[in-house]
Length: 406
Ligand SMILES: [Zn+2]
Image 1: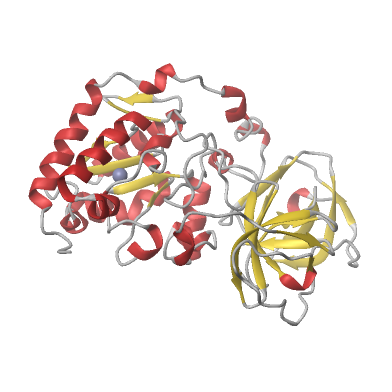
Image 2: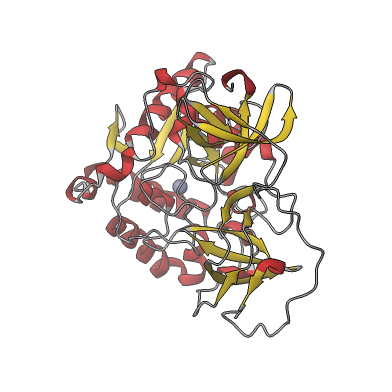
């Protein structure tokens, strides 16, 4: 399959199709918007938050794979379709474009464009929110033209597109140079975006050479809004893709899921972002809970779903393991993971003197795990790093600035 054999035709169609978007009936407006769910992510007033910037709260509190489409960090790809499939967000037209985005993304986009303009770079919005029905039209159109296989590489099946979340923006140069083509990467806007988008909460979602992981050919124009905190954290992590960042980069798991097995935790068990103790703790699963197995296993670790989060746990602390597929391997006797979250450590208790962000690392560059309200008691684990303390609160463990702990 010649990779870019038909870019011209393709681009013409894509641009044509996309440009007509603005005139389409807005499916977003029609759908009921669960505004109450939304507010769950946006926590208290920014003014209350001493050590954190307001933007830190634009990401959902808990880590791991978030599949709630109302959350800015919702994870969507071919293996993780939107739930519900026909989800429609509340959107807002980006002024002067006729293209809509989720309000948070639209505001961030405007900010970004202004900043680019100051550096003499003129960013053009090519595509934003696409409804389920619009995506279905596009996908069918591509399928008719190029066949299903190729259509899937360059387009998303309805219900699996980030554009349906209202959080994805395809951008281009004002003069149209290399619009929706890989050569966009070396144009002024392409270069500027690659370097600066994360500062405004956007990440490059389909990087070069990662098609087997993301499921999409390189798209230097497709940026996904995840909020500034997560975008910076993602950038700093050095992860190759958002899939890698979430510990779901294995290429074989993209096959549709069959019947899943289950297992039981035999201890308070850390769910981590990857297979191994060096990965981030997403949450601690209490002992005796049932977890869902996704079917992925790696050197003694299992990928599980619990409390609507997906991550990895050590198989040492699982019983009644029944893999969903034909995995008949016995649990291997791996070295035990020392659970860092168990409360038997020699730490003490401290009280928060302000609404305080718990972060994934010692420093404001790390992701916000949750916000601990002022006046709450947290457990310290005894670990400290340059003024930051490792603390446990509400069964989450992370780092908090010692300035606001007494
Ligand atoms: Zn796109």
